[in-house]
Length: 602
Ligand code: C2E
Ligand code: MG
Ligand code: MG
Image 1 (cartoon, rainbow, N blue to C red):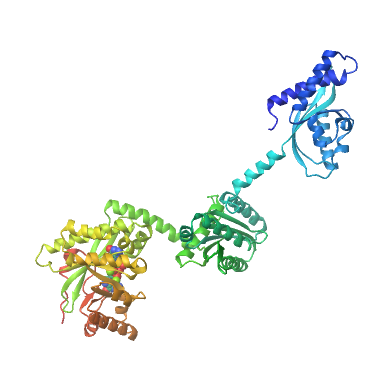
Image 2 (tube, protein in one colour; image 1 turned 180 degrees about the vertical axis):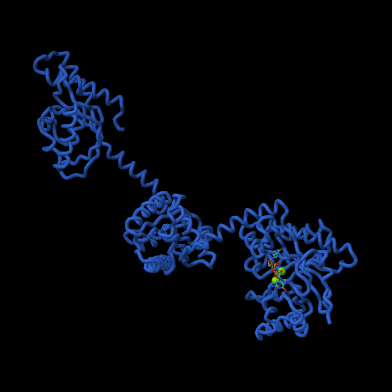
């Protein structure tokens, strides 16, 4: 290490010369020339940056270089003749003695790392020592020479490097690598103690927003405060780590053997963490910032230690999944992992792949469900996406639309739906029988929020040649959850070219009335859940009646969805309904079937 190979050989050669001619033959063969070479050899050894020494068979020092003198802070004369027990504390001396004796006994050079503590009670220093027996011309061992390099500083920086490799620079907490290692150990411990442990995945809510508004420097300060606060909740066996960004993980061990105790215990910890973070706002440069967190929990004993062989990764993945559930459930809460989450996730991932394939292979279709007037005459239709999968059979729109929304694929799928529907509308426009039909197309929030939404609709209309006044776009309230103004502006733009809007699933949201007043809707669709029980449930009947009245007073067309029987149709007509849709008039089907669906009204 500190002593290079060359320096070591130089020192070794010098020592050998010194010991052969100098120490033994000093009195007998002294000559001027030899004196000079001895002095220059000693000078060389004094320049070596390591302790160089020779001990006799009694292990008394016979030669020491300047480094040894400096180390003991006493002159060479007072060291020569002493043994290690006179210079070091007892444990060190004993250790040195046994190593030295081994060298003399075995007659071989050895390299050892030694922790040497002087008697003065100073902290020990670490040496890398090379020790070698010295032989006379007849080959008999008569002394031992050693070179000991102080590597304490090297060791310290090594430790520092090791710490850096396992810790996060910003907070000083263990990082992912070290955490995984600790989890690994925790699994070993669990196998022995049977006392369960858990992983808590903590993710700050809307940290990106805080970071973006405060600037990254303050964001960093905030993360340090978060680390400090979470640190206050630690028990002795806990490991708190930062994975990066605003993701923290707590590994809690020894929570007990009983399932009930463990679940209660871990939830108490989670709530404590949340409380520690949220109870008081964080102080940053005079400003106060409140922090919230979503926490996901996974229990160690539930991770099977099967063939995959990576229970630590699995545990982390589960806690992460549970954290996402907590976010999905509205943030600022605690969720425990349960296996259904994994199933749902698997299914989503599979669906995502299948949708990709489906789009590429043209597996999607549109079905058309007639909309009729009070006479039962077809006035239009709603386009509904269908996916007859060649292997999986029919996949329900409720399932694939949600998956496509979650993955963002709805934009591509929605474009296809819009273009296909417009092409159908244009085809109807070319025939006298169907010229008057309008067509409703369902839109997802993400489609509407896309910046080129207006252009897309306009392009679908232009390309197909469909009449914009026959196109109705169905939106649900979720579209208005954010960017209200921008959505409202887009609606007005499209309205100017004749496109109409319909508010779907009316009654299932919460603030429909305010939307209705502020946005340019032409139609509302009463959700089928109210129609279903219309005849038996007074409340539903009252709601349907109220919606019909509301439509009338606001000048909106009202469509009753989900009409399945003649009785429902009759009751709705009596309440003043003018537009109807449901299995009673026709199921979603081929476009050609729409026109034939008219129901003869008694
Ligand atoms: P929605 O827009 O409210 O569509 C009406 C749903 O009610 C359709 O289900 C339709 O088949 C069903 N329905 C019609 N008449 C009756 C009836 O008499 N009884 C009963 N029980 N149900 C009836 P579907 O096709 O399964 O679609 C479900 C939802 O999926 C739709 O609700 C819509 O939100 C979404 N969806 C369907 N196609 C598309 C699409 O092309 N794009 C988008 N973004 N969403 C779509
Ligand atoms: Mg609809
Ligand atoms: Mg609906």
